[in-house]
Length: 357
Image 1 (spheres, rainbow, N blue to C red):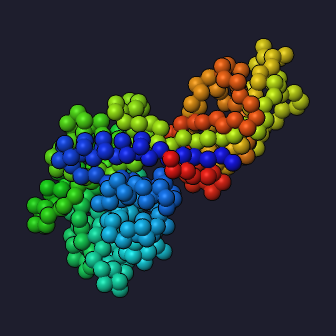
Image 2 (cartoon, helix red, strand yellow):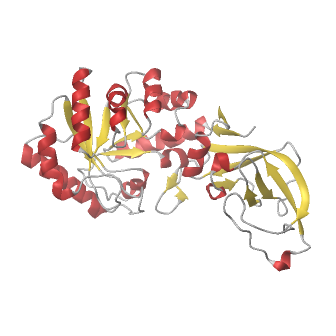
Image 3 (cartoon, helix red, strand yellow):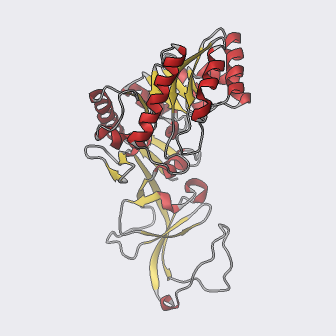
């Protein structure tokens, strides 16, 4: 059975690095833990590192977090669905919002639960995912401030999440100016200006974050140590928090090219034939993992850099061993680092065992 490991020492190293970085620049941050897919043992460990705030986009995960520590502040980081309003108020202390009708429902439910639900209003800065348009901001706020059992505690934005629009100092200044505009117009203090995700860290390191932007939600860099501008590991951070391990279930020397009439495979792929490969053979290994777990091999990075991918079906992954110096045998385990989306899919697969090491 394939399994994924979470390395406690590496994760703690990354967590400490980020905590020190944000403290140095007088900013607040919260870990985004949706990567852990509600895995209780993993959540217990990360909450032991610091439990001020955690962010997630799945209610079941927030419920698990509250069962571990009811005192931790939970932030729901996408606009709530109408059918989830009751659970949002119950398990999320703060939620991100963009629709007035949704905030009205939250207000009514918060009154029913005798709570004050806190919200952050998301503003569109060009990536074209969630966010209200800047020209509608003041009218929007005027209506929201009149609602009972609702407290606006911040504004925020997302970049590089849908269209690939990268953050810049100018865009963050724009976000900061929205805060100043709201405070001047309504005489109400906006506590948090949450500037975005892991993609902001290089700007912070270069001191290009405006003073008014004081809060960040960090997931990818926490778990992968990555600089999302350069796609390289940040010095002193770790890129081995997650490792995927799959067992070899067959090793055979086989022809490089298939033989027979070719059509599309179940993934819709039609193999391109290089006639120069006819007659060649390579040693191939089949691993006990497949597209049901990983979606695509593009998200996997073999620890043995000499391995290459041949292909995958729903339950099996085929790799080429020919260039590797290791003497693999059936029963051996092949390990992979993963990109963000690959690890997310693996963590969400109930067929993959999860181990804390």
